[in-house]
Length: 130
Image 1 (cartoon, rainbow, N blue to C red):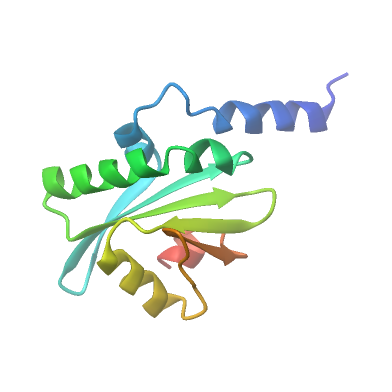
Image 2: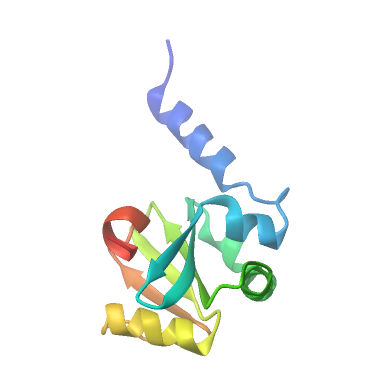
């Protein structure tokens, strides 16, 4: 028979492998552009069981966010790395205005060394931009 746990963990591991993607591909992988007020924002998410794989590329991903803003004439790009095992999201400090947007929406968010961890945040559709 099929071991459902092993199958699920294998699927999560496959999704966590982003080594074949460029930083810009990571930014665009699970991403949506929103018009909020007068601002045009890209909100990008990496959902993973291995957040360190994405976070180890933090500086390149932040640069890719800037590239996306330039190419697409965006006001900002928000990047979230969602740890589905520990049920939290790490938001990267892509720009000073991204920090302002996140802290306005989540007053408890505290940025340190370019990141803020948002406990319990798992869904872009339900929690990040409802």
